[in-house]
Image (cartoon, rainbow, N blue to C red; front, side):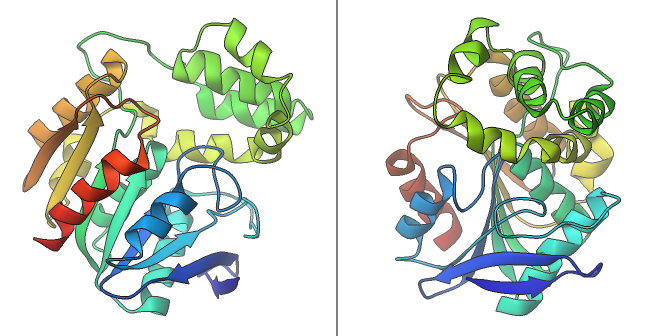
Length: 261
């Protein structure tokens, strides 16, 4: 593992594989290089790009520095870009797509942007996360209720049926989920109330591919559609047969096609 030091002294762990134009992958909530889909996706993409998989601050092998801010997470990406040499492509998943959008809006040295299903809310129906999500996450973690924070994320933010987190809490993976529970408030902060911001979207100047799954939940399908409508220089791509847990085999060829052309 290599590390890079962010502006506030936080050590960001990352892995770099492959050759070609640099591409940084940004995980969604609770995921890292040790847990989640991006290591496999990165390995497949490394045939075409120099792929950087990193641990977002507070996760796995990256350190953390309080207090948290979205600007600090953007600085982490900026440090990685400077380390590997920009401009870079960014590929973000879920709330990681929201973070990629934040980075692009701030003018980082980015060539192209791929956003897979950032979980914004629209006025077109669907589940609405609580407005005080950030505060609720902080309170539960400060009280040592990490499991409750993960359950709150699954039920109240994602909109899963109540029995799903109960069942998942009995599985071996639950321990890994609880380990990153303190970062759930970070994801909620990145999403800024989970509302599509026309102002933020309008600040992105680079070519952007907004992707979603044909079989994803209605709110996610509405979100990518709305974002593509308000973001200049963007293209909406819907993957047939896919949902929020996208298959790497379905995703990677499309990402390669869009970024290589």
